[in-house]
Length: 452
Image 1 (cartoon, helix red, strand yellow):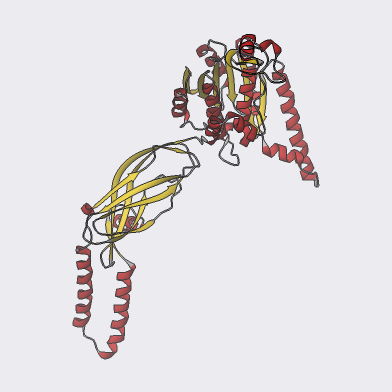
Image 2 (tube, helix red, strand yellow):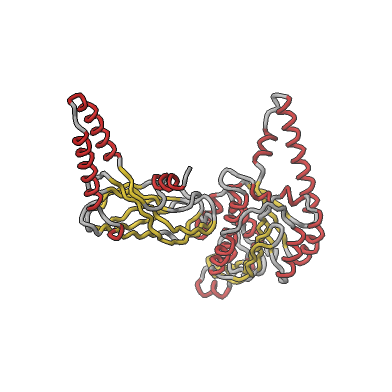
């Protein structure tokens, strides 16, 4: 295809600037052509043919001349600075028509191909008025995107020609992980965990920070009765304690090859990010220090420990754009690194693939040393395919072979997990939809039991 033909084809695809004939003009010429063919039976001369074509062409050019000019159109786009992956949001486009005639238009916004694209959008703008247009979109891939172009096509007054122009409107949007579970936890931690079939476990009786004085209820430790307030109010009052604040937690997020395995919604890394942000919000709300380290073959992102809900924004803006690498994760190097940057006793919470991690013999020696000072917990996502194959009925020889192989893989995994857990390294797996709730529940349980 030659360059002029490519440019012409690009105009039909909402690219660049240009003037295109509409279906109305083509129909007019089609009717004229049919009339001239019929008129040849009455001996129409060439001068009449040329005159009629010239009149129609002149009329269409006059229609084009009096149509709105590009300088008479003003367009603004209002795009949110942040969008959550997979959630819909509205984009607003304001169009001002400063010409003396109404225009019918079609537009295509230059949002990335990974976004939902409900285009072209149609509309009518009266003369000397401003119209607001909205469309709904959602992003499937996290990252930082620049939206620079908006393609606008509008018809002339009679509608014989269509003008096309491109507006340069630069906006930047960040697509961050889905924060639905984080918001649910911040609204009500207890309801969030109960909804997921879990609950915040009762705190172990022991020392902690004083919280408040309340009425004594059946089951309270008699040693916590506040006798001074009991005598003053003439009813039994009890002291309530909560776990000590200011503990340290380091969240490790694996970005290696196996974290790219697809799930029903997104992949393992997407679910790990959502769960990591939720458990970070839980720790920060509790007054603890939280640091985050994302890695694969080497360290990708490290957020130093800090407390306060401002740290949640720091973590979110640091890890929202991390992607799965094609390399295998180097657990030994990362565990050595994290021990050098985290000297204080801390809870290391690792989001990774359990099956891959179990075969990393080189990481075992580092974890033994890490266990002397820190507490280690690994959380992975259950392999739904493996569990499904185990539950299959062996109706055929092939099904029986697949089932036996799946059972063998499960036995190997359990044996390896038992070996690691004997070293005091706890590993758990959860369904993808309950990963965040499981992580938060185990964090609350560890803090309530005073294991740090």
